[in-house]
Structure formats: structure tokens, C-alpha cells
Amino acid sequence: MKVLVTGGTGFLGQKLALRLKNIGYDVTAIGRNQAIGKGLKEQGVRFIPCSLEDRDSILALCQGQDFVFHSGALSSPWGKYEDFYKSNVIGTRNIIEGCKSANVKRLIHVSTPSLYFHYDERLDVKESDPLPETFVNHYARTKHLAEQEIDQAFRDGLPVVTIRPRAIFGPGDNAILPRLVKVCEKGMFPKIGNGSVEVDITYVENVVDALILCMNSGEHTLGQKYNITNGVRVNLYEMIEDVMSRLGKSFSYKSISFRKAFFIAKVLEYFSTVFLGGKEPILTRYTVSVLSKSQTLNIERAKKELGYEHRVSIEEGIQHFVDWWKSNEH
Image 1 (cartoon, rainbow, N blue to C red):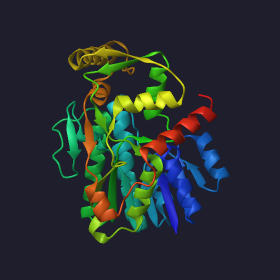
Image 2: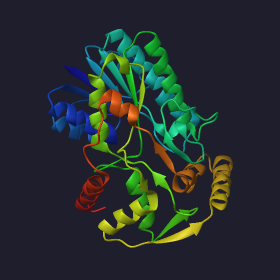
Image 3: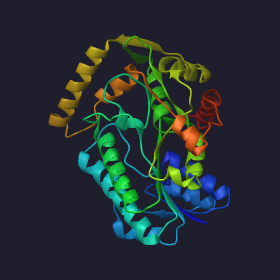
Image 4: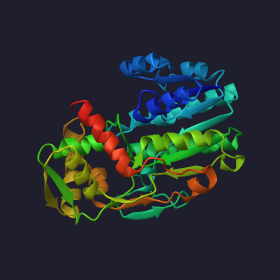
């Protein structure tokens, strides 16, 4: 069986490509980071440097593949809309065209639960719950457009399954926990609101499990979307304290109200857009929302229809991350 993984040099894509290789698949990974690609090659994964916007290359790479995992995307809380659109919408459109022309058995698409949220409290969100009228950022907006492309492809006859994994962490993470740790290392972390913030986080290998389940799930899962988390809510600030304690580092909080933080972020975003050529501000309204509003997902559909269960607990996952962080002398 031949498998193509987009975003193969990203955090999730690397883990997926290596797992598939280790269980016997012939894996081709594509991505932009040639240094990480070299590491994948050394572990037996075929690596092809390629941009999702390169239609001709994408179509050629899809030929002969049995399964395609589309985990490639531009993921960031800030940036230019056209960059997100090219990567997340045009890139997905190219993957769909490639999968159709190659008659792949199944396309498994990695979306995001970011499109659920809009600076508010939302608990136990189901896949069928209504989406906000406007999205929190360009990433969420373009990932929603990408899902619409996927939905149309399904209606056209392409076998597709979509997952929406929340806040992926683990060894090799370069976004979620590292960002929090680096802020704490400066000695002060902003506590926005009352600190009673419940969130979902998901250990990366559990997400890989979910993706592999999507390869052979029943036909009733085709065209469906599935929330993926560890299935356990955690208090955001208690988790940060736990991580820093395991790292042997101390820090303190600087409390600030949600209203004040949101106003400051709005001003910073305006200033950055108008005067700094779009440079990412040190605080965005999305970040303020994440640090102050409880946001949790319902994963009953994934459990029932995919047979998904988390194998690695949050506690185990955090320890794996801490061990990796220490061994790499960050």
C-alpha cells in the first residue's frame, strides 16, 4: 500500500509518516523543510520537497497512491490572508484534484476546531454545532473554506474523512507548549480573567491513531468530520504550572482583565496592520481568547464511529514532552 502525507515536515505529519512507515506502508512525505525531510529519508520515508500550491507536482505525486493524508497547512494566529488562502484553500483544491485523477481509495483531511471559536466560552462543542458567522482569524477562515472544498469533493464521489484535532502537543512540538514555556521563562505569564479556563489538549500519537483509524473506517464515516482530543478537560493554568514544575523552572503571574487584554490586543493588531507592515503583534485577540475562555470539544462521534480512544494520557504526554525538552537543551 502506498501512502502520501502532505505536511510531512510539520509536527503531526512527521509523526504520521514515521508511524505508517513502521507498520509497513510505502510512504512518501512532502513538505518544505528540507532539513526535517533529510531526517525522514534517513528513517526510510521517501521525501519530496514540494509546495501545496504547485499544482502540477501535487497531481503527479498523487498518482499511484492508495491513500492520501492531507495534514499540510499554513497554521498561525497571524499573517497575510493571501498566504493562508494559497496554502490552505488552493493547496487543498490541488490535493483533491490529484486524488480524483489518481482514484485514491481514500483522502483523510486534517482540519481544525479553531473554526468553532469566536472569543467566547464554548463547552462540549459537537461537530454539528453551528459555526460562528465570522471566524477568529485567517487560518480558521481558510480552513473552513478548505472543508467546503472537501465537502464538494465528497459530493462529487471522492471518499474523504475529516478530523479536527485540538491543541496537539508532544515531543517535537514547536507551537503550543514551547510558546507557553518561553513566555514563562521570561519570569511572568499573563493570567487573563479569573484563571478558570478549561481546555482540551491532544497528545500527538493519539491523533496519529485517529488518522490511521480513518483509513479503514466504515463507509458511514465518509464525508463526516470528527473532533479529536484526549477526552479529558484540563485547567489551562494548572497545566502550565505542571509543565514548568517538571522542567524545574519558576515563574509568576501578571493578572489582567479580559476586557483590558482584548482592548490592548485589538490596538496592537491595528498598529501592526497599519504601521508595521503586518508584523505579528505580541498579543492578538485570538491569543487573549485562548488564555481566558474555556473551550472544549465533544468526541463521542469519533469514539462511536471511528472506535477512537486515547492511548497516551495527558500526564504521560506532558512527561514525554518534558523529557524531550530537557534532552534537547532548550
